[in-house]
Image (cartoon, rainbow, N blue to C red; front, side, top):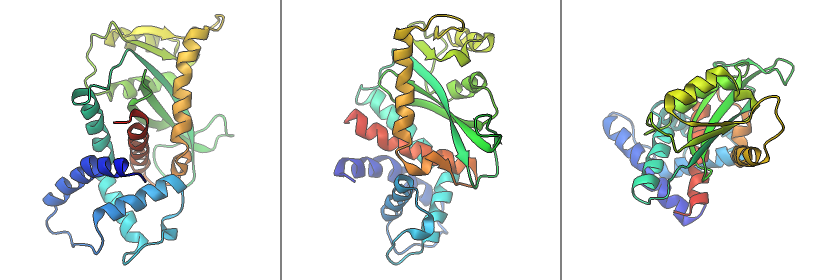
Length: 259
């Protein structure tokens, strides 16, 4: 892990962790620094290994897992990611949005127990569907996790609501998506937020320009799935899995934006 990544981990994630722990005064101190625990959480995220196979000094793998669950319950990784977006927008002036792209991908489930639905592409096995919205710089602005049997178009409203600072007057911003989003439900959402409708239409010849822009979200899914813990869901709770996704896109954005 390079020095720049470690710097921003300390600047955003460790700052939120320290704020959280100030309010939890009765917690017993541990032998290793919290940065050491965070680096091992990232190791699990990248390799997809089980917690018990971590090679640790002076602490148990159960301690690392316990702190991950504790930080996930308090939304440390999602808050840190949105703080990073705010930093890019207001301080670095690098977050500029001219269009949005959205799509979903299926996530196989192995140990999860909540927020599951039958995957129609995998013989009805239980799975999740990850919905994401990125901008023209391939930076995710919002994501959400759903049951696998929910139609793509029905995931749009919950995903678009999560975008910070999205005003209801975005006449200069377009939204690109595939044919699954071409229905009255999505059209009403775009009218409500005053976004330009650039969804690929059904029963039409393929629009090469729109399809080329839409493929950027497929590329981003391939970047996310380089983190092997994201490919399949091993977390019992969907919220913990979603926090892993936020941590992965935090690392991707730091690397891609060269801040």
